[in-house]
Length: 474
Image 1: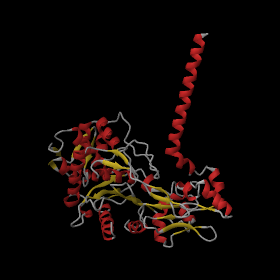
Image 2: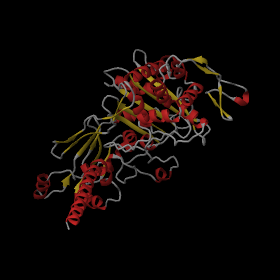
Image 3: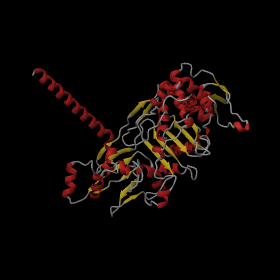
Image 4: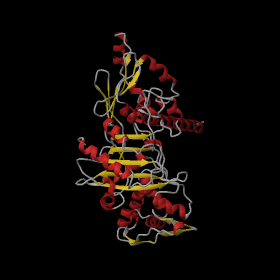
């Protein structure tokens, strides 16, 4: 009998532990995923309740009204069509065409679900519909509208601008765009998918911008990485095929080679041969570990930004695949937002901040409901590694492939990329970089699809964006 009682006691303790674990996990899941579940289109409770509430307004960081309800309770957007289009992928629209725009993702605030009971009672006794909270974003609508004009006509792509000290996203642009005030049938059938937010959903081969990660891995795994001599013949044979550099045309007998060079020089001229050699010397496991330190293969669960997960390819790969991964190709994929975070980590002494787009929420009476605070996402690399990479990225802009981003008298640092796409004749043009000045802590990531070289297309766009920011008080 005593043994039976002891067994029952053990079972009870075990069940209690399971219930406690379930409660902890439930609390964690609600904290992390609650907004995602709440804003889901399948949440019928929210859909039904929206009819009883006047939605709150959405503002940019400067107080510009981006979305509000008119006197007939219709949702209307900014008066300037250029601003509406530039901000549409962040704000969203009343029909829910954009996944995770503020209109849907911030529904709990906009439709008054965060109200206290006294506030609800006050609205009830006044015989008024509840008015939801105002959501103020970190984004600058003027910057976004200007930056949108810089993209080559007819080209799809994305741009992200963020404060690398805080993680505030100042611009999150995706092209093509559409007008949320006048959603046409053409927009719905456009094969370029204007409802698709390329800044956070687009998974691209990062091309040579990934050489930031490869170089970081070399610096943290090889004591002589900065002084080691590499040899670029222009044709690095890996298996039965070659790793080549930009400008090489084997059919025409034209070979681009850089001769003997250091890691700094290889980074400056973006030498594929060198970075393929580095990847092979590191091996897949070490390079993968560094990439994961930068957030690759992580499940991004940021507080108000829903981002597709960047992928470092699976293991047990061929040497050719490993070599091309070091260059930024193979099956490697990343979003423009994530590559902005990579550049930002270099600027911020190796510390990668969590990106966020909601600055604060305000009640109907104007009182502060929530206020965002910066959060560290992870430490991507050692401070000394970041310092070395910063100097490398500076030489790219002053005398390397990224001179198009140079602004006289301003410490602009960056890395270009020209990522090959199998299904396209041209390449995707990339640039990631930042201003290395305490008073101007801003990073940028740009990708232009099917546009050619990052140095000739994306780098000048970065210069224009940074110059606009400096001219407008940033």
